Each structure stands twice: as C-alpha cells, then as structure tokens.
Image (cartoon, rainbow over all chains, first blue to last red; front, side, top):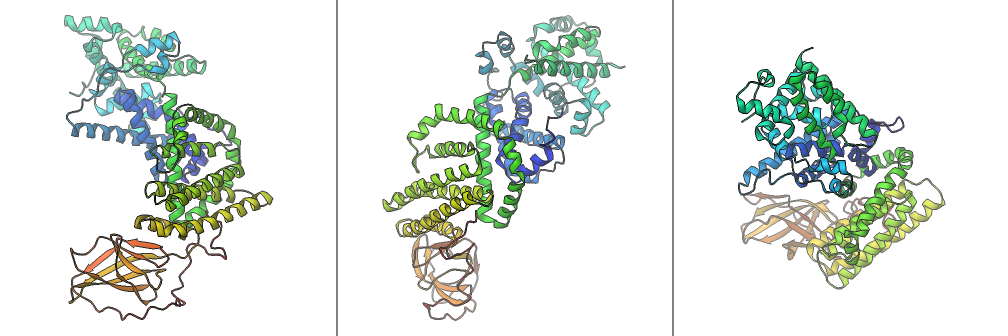
Length: 222
Length: 382
C-alpha cells in the first residue's frame, strides 16, 4: 500500500526536509498519512471526537520527534507513525483507567456529519451504519488479532506488509487474520446487530455447530 | 489452497476493488460485491467476509475537513516554534537549516500551487469563522491573541515567495514592536508585554530566514536594510523598556537584546557557602556583569556584585529561609540574567579577594559578543 511520491519529490527528500522542521515537508507528510492514522485510531477508539484528539496528539508528537525517526523508506516511516498512534491510544486508555468516573467507550457511534450532510444517499446509508458494536467487538479481540484486522481490512496493507509490520511470517499472518475474523464474526453475531449475520445467529441459538465455529483456533480475549 | 489462504485472497481482492472504486470517486461499501459473490462459493467464508466488509466500510468516514485543516495549521505552528527555539539556542543548527533550505527552494516553488490551495482553505476557514473573532481582538495580552497569530502565520505561509513572506514578517514585527513599546510605557505587564515580545522575536527571525534564502541582488539588499533598521529600533525600544518591566520580562528582554548583538549579562552558575557572620558568600560565574550590578532574589536587590576575575564575581546574601532556588543579577542599565544552577557548600570556602569595581571593563571582561556585534549592534543572523 505504498503512497505515491513523484520522481522529482522522493520520499527520502521529503523526510530529510521534515527532519529539518520544514513546514511544507511536514505538511506533506501529514497530508499523506492523515487518513491512515485517523482510520487506525478510529478503529481502535470508535468515537470520532476521541479519534480526532488522538490523531492530533500523534501528529504533534511526530513533529516533536521526527529528528529521531529511524526510517529509511516510507514504509518504515509509516510503521513508526503508527507506533506513535498505538502508544497514544494506549496512553488514552491508561488515563481513562485512572479516572474511573469516566465512561469507557462513551455512547454510540456518532454519525459522520460530513457524510450525512453531503446529500449523497449512499454516503448517508454508510454513515448510518453504527460502529459501536464493531469497535466493541474489536476491543474484545487480542491485541494481535485487532492489529492484523485494522492493518489488513481498514488500512489496506497487503499480507506481506502486515507481516513486516508485525515481525511475523506471511503464513502466520494469514492464519492470524482468519482466526481474528472468525472471532470478530462470532462476537458480532452474538451481539445481534448485523442483520446479514442472521443465519449464523440462528445456528448459534439452535446450538447447531456452524463450519466457522469448527475452524476458529483461538477465541476472543475476555 | 486452505481456507486461510482463500480468505487472504478474497480480502486482497476486496481491497483492490475498493481502491478501484474509490479511484472512480465512489465510496467503498458497494465495491466489494464481486468479492462477496466469489466468497459465496466458500460458504464458511461468507460471514467472515461480511465482517471484513464492515471493517472496510470504516474507510467511508474520512477525517473531517475542518479538523484536518486546523490540525495542519497546528503542525505548522509547532514546527515554527521548535525551529524558533533551535535558532535561538543553536546558531550552528540554524546555519545548517539555511543551507538545506536553499537546496530545497525549487521543490518548494514546484509545490506552491498545491500548497496554496490547502492554505487558502485554511485561511478561508479562519477568516470566515474564528478568524473574525481573532481579528476583532488581536492585541497582545488578549486571550484570542494566539489565534490571531495563527491567522498571521497562515497569511505569511500564503506569500508567493520568500521576498513577500519576508516583507509580511517585517510588517508584523513592526506592529509588535509598537505594541511592546505601548505595553512598557503604560506598564501593562504580562501577558501583554510577553506576548508582544514573543511575537516580535518570532517575526524578526522569520524575516531573517526568508531574506537569507533570497539570491544576492537589489531586492535582498533592500530587505536587509529594512531588517537592519527594524533591529536598530528594536534595540532602542527594548533598552527603553527595561526600566518599566518586572524581573521576568527584564530577563527575556535581555535575552532578546543578546540575540540582537547587544552585550548582555549571562549567569552560568552560583555557589553558596555559609559564612560565620550569618551571610551566604555567593560566588557567581558568568559574563557581561557590569560594575554597579546588584544581586537579586525574588526580584529584590539584596547586595552588590563585585568582580573578582574574568568570569567570576562575588556577592553576599543574608541567610534567612535557606539557600534561594534561583539568583539573578541586574546591571545598572536594566539588563538582567538569572540562574537556577546553584550549588550550596556545607561550610565556607576561601572566597576570592574582591577587587574594587572599576568603571573601565577589563580586556577579558569585555565580553564575547553574543552572538554578533557590529557598529550598530548586530548582523542579519536569523
């Protein structure tokens, strides 16, 4: 999932310039990676406003520490940036845990106002699909399962890239993503929010083993 | 092919379809229908693919444009602030950056159109929304002053070349110099004075940086002359302000004067040893401390400072509540420096014999100019 950098504007030059705190170069990196970071954080947190806060923290931390970024190419840089985002998400949950009066995963998924107001019927339909259950189910997976699904299905990395990011073999990633999707599917079916999974829910309620149940290797984190 | 491999293939196909559809300007949701149809032939994979598709549809929610523009502006501000800090602290780093900037100038120009579009969007948002409020209350010390500065940075960033950007920064610097003069004359204190000083230093440095990127020629010479004139006025205004402001502002103003090439005091440390007469013997190290300088604790003078040798000074301080956390020295002209690098010795050590204050600075005391000194007190170092 490589970004498109033109020949006369190679990534290494942009990064070198950004390390010298050039605003244009930093802005360019930000523009290129905003969606990646935002979607990753949104997938982890579920709430748009929280995702915006953590995305902001991630990019400001990028400016503060870009001189120390050990990245020789764009993929390594992306991995470094996602590492910051992962730490910021963890920081958020740590802070939240230290404040028991606050509610984790507050409220339902808020519809993206921009899409809902765009007048695009398809966009509105998509926007209306509530995400709270998906994110809640994701949070019940193991860290590795959650990460592989976000990288593969949300950020769109190829299997080999995910293997590189997670320091695993591609075969292990394929097995991990299978188990992760199986676990996620079971959790979503059990929550009963996805009408398209009615058949699977029927299997579950009737106690009839579904082929999916026989394949999954590891269950969700409890 | 096992189910894990088949699922992997289907996920890749779904991703590809999504990318293709997006490139045609349609959002993800309906794009993966081909993958879904294919997955139907693997009945046990269908629910998994449906879950994957729900995850993928997250991409239909792009970051909000207002948020994205605001964050980009914050990133630029953060970068400018960090660069400013480095320029003030590490002149050699500044030189390296200037060289890099020159090498990158063609790149910046090629990207000008694309960047301008983004900046115009940000400027429109600022000017139509919060910018209106900021403009209405743009004076230093106002709670919205930071927002106004952000608006100005965007405005400077939209300049079509370094010369225009330099002119803009010079204009803003003049504005803040006048505001600083008023704040000192009317004893407005902080944050009015500190806001004005901070903005002045930033726009001065920005102007110098932009000018340094210009090729030699009449345009550059004219801007350099304008910057020299600004700095002459800055030195006069800042010196004049020293008698009207509190100690913290005197210290920052002294630093600003030092950056402008004026010889200013600097303290690097202090050693306190308790004397038998109930006083601290204070040994100070530093430079630029003039005859008649006073030792200051919490902004109040507590005794005279006497030069003992090049770079070392002594003073006495009454022992009251214990050793102070920081000490400052104020020169007769109002310049001041402080240090919190204080070492407390358990017993009195032999203190150097003071010499009488001498109105004529010693050759080795006529301090190393910092960072540059010229006939009018400075060069165009950003």
